[in-house]
Image (cartoon, rainbow, N blue to C red; front, side, top):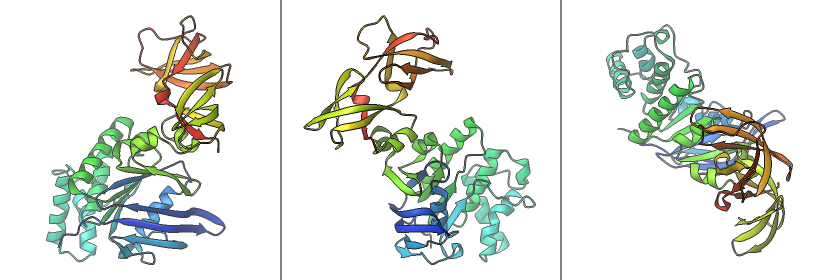
Length: 357
């Protein structure tokens, strides 16, 4: 009987290695058929969390459930999950089809049945015709697909990906992440996915769990995290936000006046009290004009200018407040030069107030 996708639930899960706490009081739920990405810098606890789902690590405290069943004390062999590792972990002495058939064979499927199951999944990932090749005869992207087919062949309730695209070049990463997302959606798989790449997380996820210092910093949809970060850390980690110190005035309904340098603006206060705080502004939301133009809210100097194909990247040094901003602009025909004096302005709708904590 074919199994359906399962939910995953963590309740107050802690993982310690001696005196080091790798995962600290983490709680979340992944719905059946949902792709949730764990995102964060190295050492934040995201891979340990994935290994706790897999049963490759055992929780020090808390409860882990898969499909509503408590699996906290179960080994990896007793959990209905499969993992695609960063290194792919293919057997070099086996052919592609033998690699994929290995799991069903170990579980007792006959040779013919295991091969049939393997061929079905190789066809699903677009590798039909390459089944008799050795892994070394495949490209990086093809090896990645073999690893996915091998994980899928046992039809697990939960599929886990640990930095699956880190060994691929930029163009191939984009294509393979699209393939993974399409496969997940077409099969209705429950997927937990680990990456440190913000763009990758935004592209593939239903929801993202941002982790920092072994804890969850924020959970939300890609758009929620990008447009409404809850903290300076999330704002900065999700897409190179500029963090500008501001003074928040008295609340007026949902809004408050803020002071950026000498310029006063009105923005949504998001529950942040009057006093010192920050606004997060994305690089593409900064309007840059030559200093002679009127209406600029802040004055600065272009300290770096880089042409990157379809847009320009600028570093702008401000005098008041004293800081450097990172901005992008679509005009590559008449770019501003290094050393240019500029005036910058912001659309208030693009400013997100975050606490000074």
